[in-house]
Image (spheres, rainbow, N blue to C red):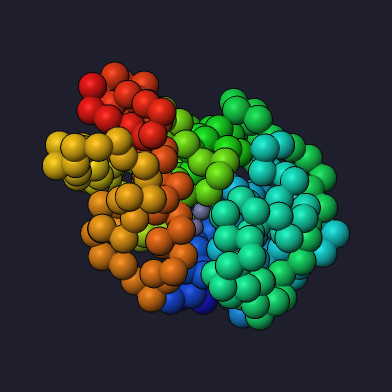
Length: 301
Ligand SMILES: [Zn+2]
Ligand SMILES: [Zn+2]
């Protein structure tokens, strides 16, 4: 077996972690196999071809519409594709991505178009939509449950197998940079979805962009660290509110490392998604009564 394909359980032998190219750094992501079900196709074309050769895959579950999770769809022919109905329109028409990233008619939008071309991405016909709590009987001992976990995208789903206590979290990814920066994203929902996952009985957690996390206490620790990042973003934003003596709009806070403490090689994209993410924080802080909306922007309550 290729070294990037690793069994996750001694007891449940048809569950595998499939490591994405470059350890799943964008534009790649990790996948999983449960029996003849594959979750996500962004590991890299080369790796995906090997997976298709080594396993009989009949079903492809897509966690959400982002390109780094669906880029290999075109390599899988005549199999059944599944995703949540809210993400289906974009997976079926990837030209919508720029609209959802708010990058239309920007240099970043052009870069994205080029990337989709380089990745040879195509629209995918989605055969079935999936919804929360729906269960796939994979085998006598494996039932894979859909956990609708919106926030990262509106139709984002995790997948939970309760006998093995193994769960795929998708892009509630437990990395240093939680993302809720597309127009269909929501921080309020993102935090609620974290809570849903935290309350499941899980021994092994796999995410789109991190090595598998093994053990309940390790998973709990990762969740605490992840939630702290969100809290620190709130705090940095509130700090700015205390410093300003006029109403604030998200554009006033752009480029100040309030969301991304460090910009990466994707800085131009980050500056755009940062605005959207700041808006999601404003929405949350307003709902919590910490800031109020005035005619010219938000002020501290
Ligand atoms: Zn994503
Ligand atoms: Zn991702």
